[in-house]
Every structure is written in structure tokens, then in C-alpha cells.
Amino acid sequence: EVQLVESGGGLVQPGGSLRLSCAASGFTVSSNYMSWVRQAPGKGLEWVSVIYSGGSTYYADSVKGRFTISRDNSKNTLYLQMNSLRAEDTAVYYCARSERGYNYALVYWGQGTLVTVSS
Amino acid sequence: EIVLTQSPGTLSLSPGERATLSCRASQSVSSSYLAWYQQKPGQAPRLLMYGASSRATGIPDRFSGSGSGTDFTLTISRVEPEDFAVYYCQQYGSSPQTFGQGTKLEIK
Image (tube, rainbow over all chains, first blue to last red; front, side):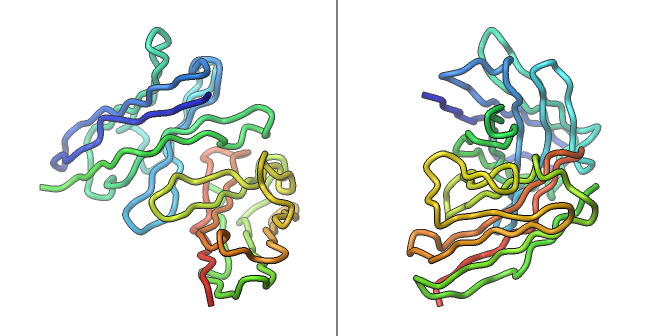
């Protein structure tokens, strides 16, 4: 069974850093396209970043240069390193896995972890 | 960046009625990489449709998708009580990937 469990969210001051983790089970992270999607309180979904199986990474303009997506193959875990955090980064952060058989749409989602950026 | 505009923002219907949700793109989107998601309060999104018109596993056939180029539609033939939720379209054929702002389907 595919499972994605995010952790690492919490309260952080503006300008601070946080690293989110997404522990995967039931499949191999490095063999799949993995994404981060966020949702500000009461707002819609915003795509944040993707890492492809080959290692290429892409980012939304709103986080480029501040966030870094990565993975640890030995731990089968996806990460999102978030630096220079701003109030507008406050959101629930979901990790999600694309599925080849679904034209790489986001089929599997974690439950999300809340990041609050506030002084 | 491709901007996806969904309409209406809120759709008020009674169970049994037909729902038509629109997703319009600022430039042409590959149909292969247009998806629809359903999200209920406190839950993660769930994939409904991919490739614009293919239903994901377990999605009832009252859900259908259509469209090409810049205009896409999600239709629910007869809305069931469990269908009241927020619906998002997403394009992931061009970077950056983008979501529409969502359509809330509410009970009338």
C-alpha cells in the first residue's frame, strides 16, 4: 500500500528556515516523480516543486531560490528545505506522487503538514 | 506561466442536478496533462480525471471530462450528496505546473 507521511511543519519566524519531510512506503521515491503542493488557509492549491526520477528539479517562481526539493534514497524520503520564509509561505504542505499510468497526474497524496510563518 | 481560470467560483445545485465546471487556460494546454481534483474539507485532494477525459480508478461514471486547447470541462451528470466539495483543474505539461483557483460545489 502506498503511503506518504509528511512531517516537519510548525511555527517559524519570518526569515527563518524549516525542512519538511515526506516518508514514503509501498514504493521507491527515487523511481517516481514527486511533488510538493501547498494550500494557504482558506485558499486554493498551489504547486510548489517537483523532482523527477532522473533528478531534475523545478520550482514555482514564488519559491525559486528559497526552497530546495531533494530526496534520500536510503531513507525513501522526500524533503523540502525552505529558507528565507515569508508570511505568504504559511500553508499546509502536501507531498504527492505522480503515476505514470495516469499521465503523471498526482495520484497519491499525504495528509499534509502545516507551516506557519509569523513573529 | 499558464494561468487556469475556473468558473463559476461557486456552483449551488440540488442533488440530482447536472453540474458543469469550466477551466479556461491562458494558452494552449496539452490535453494529456490536464487533470481534475476533488477536495473535501480537512482532506487532501483526490484525483478525479487525467488526460482531460479519463477517469481515475474508483471514480463513478457520473463524472466526465472533456475539452482541448484552452477550454476544458468537468461534468457531473447527476450530483450526489458526496459530490459537494471544491474542484480544481491542473495543467502539468508546461513548467511551472499550475492549478486553477477552484470551483466550490455547494448544496442549494
